[in-house]
Amino acid sequence: MFEWITSWFQEQPISPELVKSIESAIESNKVLVYSKTYCPYCRATKDLLNKHQVEYKLVELNTVPDGSQIQRTLQKISGQKTVPNIFINGKHIGGNSDLQALEQSKKLAQLLT
Image 1 (cartoon, one colour):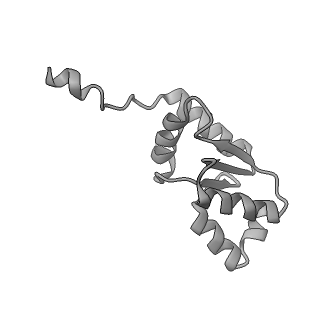
Image 2: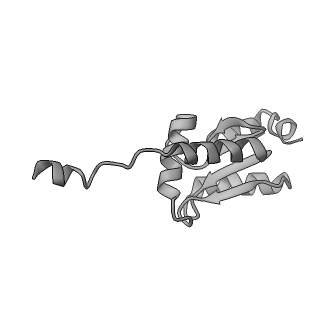
């Protein structure tokens, strides 16, 4: 009985195919943002990138069927559990506060060119 109940709370294993798919997206997009539509930090990230008029690939995790699996896989890849999860030039940048810090230090524009 205990095993049956605990099985409700066990997460499914992360699929190697999903890891490869995410890694491919990271490599093939200059700027890639994993976000959620209702997140204010995600909105701030998108606003800043739009201000720089940069094209970026956006994945809204709360609107795709496997969003929670993608977020768990991103945690495995980047070590970051939260959104936004930002990659520029194939490198994990971090979240919104990291992106804003790059902007404040005048390094963001250089990364985006």
